[in-house]
Length: 459
Image (cartoon, rainbow, N blue to C red; front, side):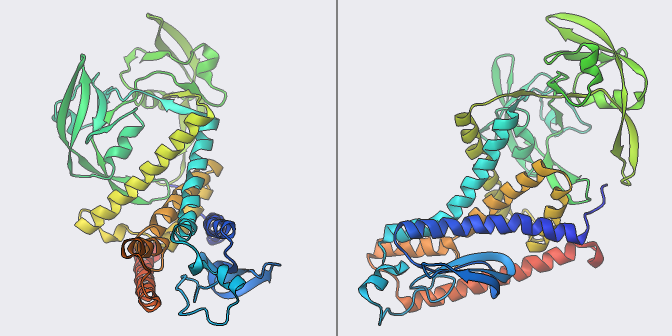
C-alpha cells in the first residue's frame, strides 16, 4: 500500500482539479450569454467573501471568492447568484432591460443555462479523445482464457475459449469492457451472452462480491464474474524490454515459461517474478510454429502488502494490442467513454435510492480532495483522467432537476413551455431557496460521510 500524499499536495491538487473545471463551466454560461447580448454583473470562482477581483469595461466584476466549492455567473436581472429573477425591472432603460437574462426568449435562456454542463461534458470528451489519439485503443478479445477460484462464470457453464459478446443486453467490444460492466452489480444475477463454436449462448451469472483495495488503501465492493480474459499474447513492450531484446514480437503467443504451460497472461507474472537476475526459456507460437527464446529477466520493484518495495523479475511485455485511431474515431470513442461514465453515475445513485448500495458510498469535497492528491502522485495521465471524471460528475450533478442548479432552471423552462408563461417570480424564488437548502443539506451529509471515512475518525 502506498502512503497517502501530504496535506499541501492534497490541497494543491484539489484546487488544480476543481478550479479549472469550475472556470470552464462558468465560461460556458458566460460566453453563450454574451452571444445573446446578456450582460454579466459578476463572474466568480468560489462563493462568499471576495478575495480579489477587477471590473472589466463591460461592467462585469471578475472575482475570486473565499469558498472554493463552485462558482457562478450573475447576469443582469438576477436577484442573486442562483439566477432567481428580480421581481421587477422598474427604472431600467429599454437598452438595459434588453440586456437582462430574463428578457431573453425561452430558447436562449435554456441554451445559456445548458452551456455550463455542456462545456464540462465536452471537456471530458476532449480529454478521453486526446488519450485515444495519443495511445490508441486496446484491442483485446473478451475471450475467456481461464477462471479464478470459485468462479461464478464457470459455475454458470462458461468454458475456456468462450468469447463474451454482451452483458445484460449491452454489447461488449473487448476484454477491457467487462470489468466496468459488472463492477456496479455485486451479488446480482446478470444475463451474459457468450459465443461458442459459432453459437451464441445466454447464461445467467450470479456475480461474486469482491472487496477491491487500491494502493492507497481505498476500498470498495465490486461485482466479479471470476474470469481471466487476457490470452498470453504479446501486445507490446515497455522500457528496455529483455523480451524484445531476445527476439519476441508483438502478436507472439506465449505458451510456456521454462516448460510450464501458459493459458492466460496473468500466469506470466507468477512465473517470472521469482526469476529476477536469471534467464528463462519462453516458448511462443508464431505463424503456426512454436519457437523458444532465452530471456534474461531484469530486476524491478513493486510494493508489498505493507507498502515496502519488493524485488521482482520483469521481462517488459504487456497484454493487449494498441490500435491507432484517427481524430474522428477518437472523438467518437471520447463520447462513448464519457456517456458510459455518466451511465455508471446513474446506476450508482439508483442503487443508493433502492438500497442496493450504502449511502456511505456518497462522497463530497473532502473525498474529491483526497483522490485528487492521490492521483496527482500517480502521474499526469492518472491526474488528467481523474479531472475528466470529475468534469462529467459536475455536468451530471448540475443537470439534476433541483431548483438552484442548472437542471432546476431547465425544469422551470420546461414548465414555461407547457404553460406558455413563466412561473411567477415569487414561486421561482421560493423553489430556488428550497433547492439551495436541499443542496446545502446534501453537502453537509456527504462532508460528514467523508469525515467518518478518515482514519482519524476510525474510517
